[in-house]
Image (cartoon, rainbow, N blue to C red):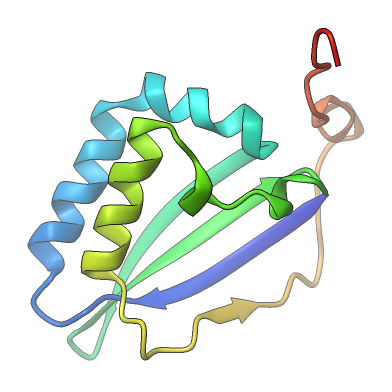
Length: 123
């Protein structure tokens, strides 16, 4: 299981577009859920913060070991393609993403035991 929290800086002047992006994801949650299983993404949460007038987005995720090998950029799903569009328009490519280090992981055993890929039929 991979647990990550990463901070990305938003390009100046893109706050309104970020709000549009997050509203897009929230209003298309059924399609979002369709994209999660192929990525072995069990939990994905986006947080926003402003520090000294600079906007940041944080991605928190819990996913299966094989999920990290699948890139949203390679997905043919229409929602992922729109998600990548917003990413390119909003996230500052000159800012090195800040990967926060997990120090303690707390989860009931029954919840962790349920986090495994769905069995693929005919594979």
